[in-house]
Amino acid sequence: MSQMLYEGKAKKIFLTDDPSTLLVSYKDDATAFNGKKKAVLPGKGRLNNLISAKLFGILNKKGINNHFVKRLSDNEQLVKAVEIIPLEVVVRNIAAGSLSKRLGLEEGKPLKQPIIEFYFKDDELGDPLINDDHIRMMQIADDTELNLIRQAAQEVNRVLTDLFDGIGVLLVDFKLEFGKLKTNGNIVLADEISPDTCRLWDKKTHEKLDKDVFRRDIGDLPQVYEKLLERLEDVQ
Ligand code: C5P
Image (cartoon, rainbow, N blue to C red; front, top):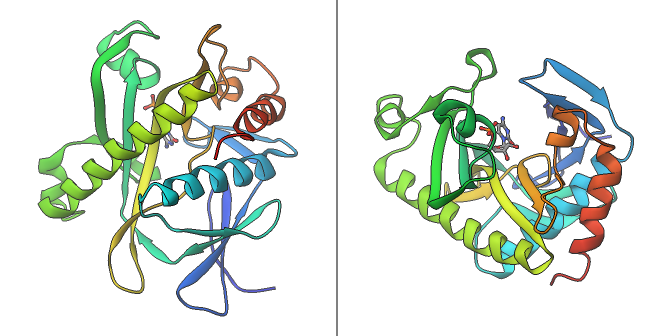
């Protein structure tokens, strides 16, 4: 077994023989509210691995550079080695979650234009909301890098909104992470894109097809993710 580099809440990262790649293994662990709520949900790792691999593959085809190389097994994928930029980049199309709470907006209210937010990725601080000035001051990214990240996030939003619309699903909001490639320092999309990191609602019924099912105890998460994977099967 190769050496584990890092274990996060939902994934383990292993070194490979090639220093330019890493192996990501998706776990069955579910966490919410910064780790305060926990459970093991058999099958969740496989579902997020399959869904994330599918979405990253499509984004690669659309010219949105990302770390995904190939899926290796039910729970594992090979990715390019990156140094993660400590930002959670959240894109929102419809009011929900912390935006609804912070601004008193009714959940489900469509936003006139997509909103991009930045959170400083730091568990101890509880991932605080920050702005461009904080990012510059803390030297998390310079202006050119931040522009690139913002543009990539908007492009991902256009591609994924269309893709989910095609299978009758609303892309309410989602979180992205970016990293610098170990090989040349170029910034690419990284981490995962799955129902753990997106809010997805059925277009007709507004049924939740994402981790809010676990956060709010309103259904069987693996069953819901399996249904989403089935809907994604025909998407190229
Ligand atoms: O909680 P909030 O409304 O700010 O979340 C916005 C989006 O970002 C949601 O889709 C949520 O699943 C995702 N998110 C995430 N990881 C976090 C925080 C939020 O994937 N640490």
